[in-house]
Length: 239
Image 1 (spheres, rainbow, N blue to C red):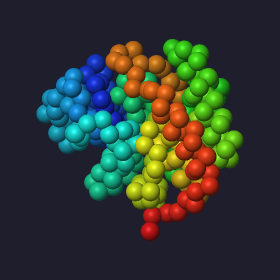
Image 2: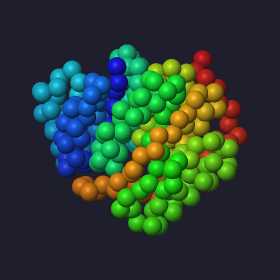
Image 3: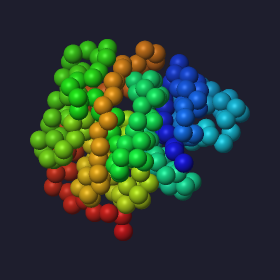
Image 4: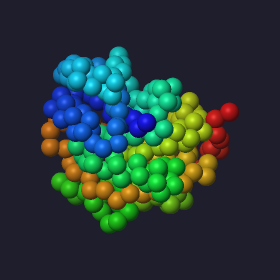
């Protein structure tokens, strides 16, 4: 079974459309929405769609804005407890094309990858409607990570990812330290260091058309210093 984890905070403009789209894809994808107490009613919209897809749309509501990394870690543990074979990270705002879920899944289920990454940078720069400053910051961050960590991944900060179950079972999820932007880097690096095969799948990333970006300058600072600390940390599998 396949589970797509979508963290949300104030995504009422997007959440119904993205869920309906995923429900119509081939491959029977299930979705777990993890909502951080959105005051705009995002969770209520999810509950309405659960009436139509009671076995495929799931919702966890948290008490406040607890961070992207903690949302995914909560989702990973839930996925393992509920028997899913492939677990995906995806944004709610259509910046990731849901059709590419199938390509990420096939990279793992058919092509032998343990972890597949929807990559903006493995085939040039494939980003639409981002200001040049944000492209430079994102692309520069991936170059920095590759230089410091030596990881052979072009889009180290990508948030569109498919994990095989064995990766998440092997990683010590309780030892993950970075909770914001750096979370994506730490997860890929840990899997790579433990010998898992990482495959990048080229995608086109499109800036959100509805709603407000949750990106802030503070998360870049966490990633910058976190990568240096990560370079000197011993990565061990779950005991």
